Image (cartoon, rainbow, N blue to C red; front, side, top):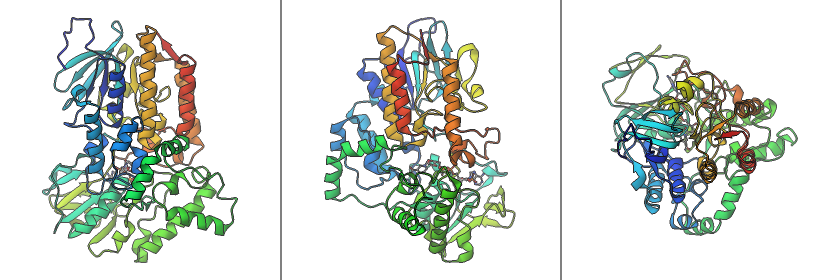
Length: 541
Ligand code: NAP
């Protein structure tokens, strides 16, 4: 990308895409197929987004691998082989590199480029972009593909920098392998990332201390290799795999059971829960009774079942109580999938520390000091999560009409139309943005929908000589209300989690609802209707 001549009115690009992860790569491909001048700016030195950064031990899919890959190219589907039902991170990163090479995408990606600011030029109807490296460019459209979980957060402990050993955030993991052999390791955080890390590190470290503030309801992943027969079945079955994903609420292979948990006998309910517990993947969350996530009484049945499972799996009855969540029901936060996670607490080399009982007071040169004890460590791992969904936007100064920043506009919670645009920010399109169904979805399934819809919109604008698109206030108000109304019907909105924007490391972040809980089929239908009606709800100029 060359530095733009600031006095020229000519645009450098039709579109600048921010990010070269799963959504950025596909956006780049489709925009280039339209013959547009497009560049993707990526802050990492390589492609992959989430799968580039999250290379901590044990990182892998919680979605079936074959439901996760891109569906747009039959050739790609036949060429690529997933080796496990739930692929580990190195394989997924290789897959995205393979995609980038196959479609020759790298030539239009500027790596090591982080957008510092982007401002809408009302007169030129374009975005002026500047990177940290001082490169400037002007483009008609700005498409963000920044990912919902890409802005890591660290605790605000006293003495954070004082630890003398190496300390890592899971989302900024080094590229060299870390050897835990003979080491005393500490992990802070027990979300999906912490769980995957803990069960891996516990196999190798001399001693592992897990600092747990809030336990989560974890369910077995049941991963395994894909043998030749299964491979052939998968390759022949892709149309059916993607059909199922299209029809399911969250874009997964798991369809919700239409029955209520209350309408069946206790024996039938138990047998169904037991069946789900024994099956791979998210069936237990997404394929459960239809009212598990909306009716507290139904949820209690499942929660009690999971409580029993933890008590069965952790041998010491006192320790077994510690990883049992006390403040939320099953599935109301994102369910971590695990492989022998609970059994880790039966190991002699693992200690579970409840930091709600005895909070961390400070990080010391030697380790972690809680209200009760100091734990000496050689390596400290922060699996402390992200400034979810809006964090990556807030880290860029995005200025729309009248100089307002997106961060200020969304300070009390996001306001969008379809999770794709926001009033005051013309020609800015937010893939997997807040209040977009892709935030509560088997990501690639919804990413493909988002990218195809947005790139179709751009084609429509160009075909009809429009230079500017922005939602109407009424459309934004209606969508925002709809998002909150739907969320209110679920138990997810009643629980603190990244879905509700609660992150105690970010005391200024308001509690709201960040995702869209209405499901991807309903969202897709709405988007299709909007397009069929000449992009109703958008002001086209
Ligand atoms: P997370 O779910 O937000 O978990 C962060 C953990 O760190 C929580 O246990 C949290 O405790 C703890 N924590 C944060 N700050 C702390 C502090 N100051 N002191 C003590 N504990 C602290 O983040 P995550 O585990 O990285 O997962 C985020 C999302 O990424 C997941 O929900 C999932 O959607 C995605 N993910 C996907 C996969 C996959 O597909 N396989 C794998 C990993 C992650 P509190 O709950 O008390 O705040």
